[in-house]
Each structure stands twice: as C-alpha cells, then as structure tokens.
Length: 282
Ligand SMILES: [Zn+2]
Image 1 (tube, rainbow, N blue to C red):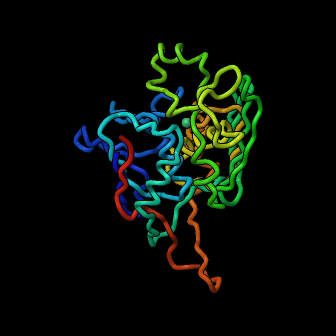
Image 2: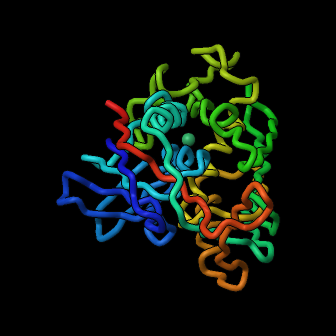
C-alpha cells in the first residue's frame, strides 16, 4: 500500500492498482457491508477494513490523499492506527492553501437500536464521547477526545483492536476474521488479555473511538460537531453517516477560517496533505 499527496479538495480516494487504478472515494455512498469491519464498494469493486487508516487520516488532520492498494484488504498491521501515524510523520504533512471545507452540524441526528445509541450534535470543533459495556474482563469504560487538541496520535492511535478468545473459532468459521493473532489484536481470555500488557488501562474504549473516527470519515468531509456513542459499533457508526448525508437540513458545508497572528482572517486556510508518498504495510 502506498499513500500519495492529492490536490486540495480531492478528499480521500482509494485506488486499486491491481484493477487498472479503479478509484473508490471514501464516502458514505460507497459503504458496502459492515460487520466486524467497514468496507467500501463501487461497481462491484471492494476495499475492506478501511476504518483504521481513515481514522489515522482524520485524527492527524489529513483531508486529501490517494491511497494506492494492490488487493482488496487494507493491512491490519498491529491492530491499531499507530503505524499509519508514524508513516505520515516520516512522509511529512503539507499545508495546502485552501480553506478546509467541513460538514457543520446544525441540529441533532440520533440513531438508536435496542440499548445501542449514537448521536451527532451541533458544536464547534470535533469532539467525541464514547462509552462501552462488554462482558468481563472489559466491563464499562468511557472516554472523550477533542480532535482539535492534536492528541489523537498519542491517546487514540496506539489503541489496538480486541477479541474474545471464546469467539475466535466461531468468527473464523464464519469468515469474519482472518489471521487474527497475538501480533495484531488483544486476545481476551477469562482473566484478561493473554498478550498483555495493555497500552492503556482503557485501551478497549479507545479503540472503539478510533473505529468511530474512521467510520465517520465516510461523511466525506471533516465533521464540525459533537458525537456521543454508547455501545455502538461499525453498523451504528455507518448508519449515522447515511442518516446525516440523507438529511440535508441537519448540516451545512462550512469553511474554516484560519486566524493570522494579528487576529485577521487569512485569505486562504489550510488543508493538510502528505508532502511525499508514504509506504505502508507488508
Ligand atoms: Zn478497529
């Protein structure tokens, strides 16, 4: 997989180099099926497990990039978004001279299913509160982040995906997980992680936050508002995106002004993109 700089306004676009450079933009229109991971499909061409890379891009403030990949599945790496963030740092992030266009939330949108909930509310910046409740040994965890505070790389990106050892055989039989191992996921036994130590005491909820940020990237532009998620998952995350995109009265396209040192608004704002290609994965 290779990431390339892209012109301002182009967004995040996947390119299948094994299929004549067929392009699939990362937008809600192209969401395919969602179970244990999020996939995109356009004209029958699939890209699967997009959430960790998209999360890293949004978390690090990268709006425009071309993602070249020569097969349908993004690399799982260590199960977190940290290797992506490190690759962005080594490639460099360039500021583009154009205002960043955001989806500014004007009124609330909520999706509820049983005791699962996700809601999007007006607010400045982009902040998220996530709470989970899983069987032991996880239990209840809650965390919040303000993405404008530039703490994504240290507080969210390193959090790894996780699974219960008891579910492993069933999931593998159903074809829902491939190659989950002690190197790319936290494997949970009855007493706790079998391949500890954890990177954070609440690594599980941080990873759910990571997934959410990646799935909401499918809105197509950075969100300006506040998100609350309780016991949600990929299906709830992407349901919120489709609800948002359908309800044109709930948001407007806004342009983020950038203040200069003397307090005047700059003539053009900043949209970061990679400055050189980044190579990622096996
Ligand atoms: Zn994940």
